[in-house]
Length: 217
Image (cartoon, rainbow, N blue to C red; front, top):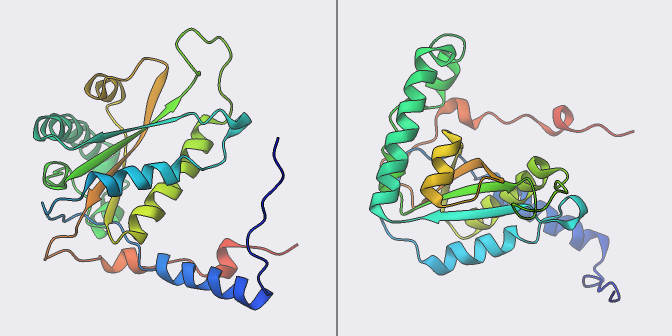
């Protein structure tokens, strides 16, 4: 145990200003689907992952692992597997019920950015602390989700573009990233600089106002 170390004692107006400034900065965050191949230093990725490691987690088990892919071979293998899965999706439910929504957001089966962007981060959730541990980690998905939120925020504040993608096919990602069976991939986060022709679809500019995402009781 150690004493709680409080933040600087700020007046309320300064606290409000800081929160508002962060809100304004994050308002410019959008998913990017057109990346440049311009390199991103590993130190930026390391610092952002370290920031994610400060997230709260169930029973403080910290049930996350981030595999950072940058080699051409790994990213090509990832793209091939993901696009195969995506073609199945777009040929099924994605080709009917969700087709219009996804088209408006610029999503499609082809994912060239998986090879072009300098980094793809795979967020794994650890169901147990180790393969031999019989005690399961609690709230794994929730904990990893919070950590990914911090990670994306850190990357955005570093001036980088990101895109979140569902981590499928799952077991392939375990093999590609050399992760054990008690871990399961949850998210892919593509990281890099936006391409010169990158644009934000009009549909993605729509954000729910505060009165639709919060209530005061």
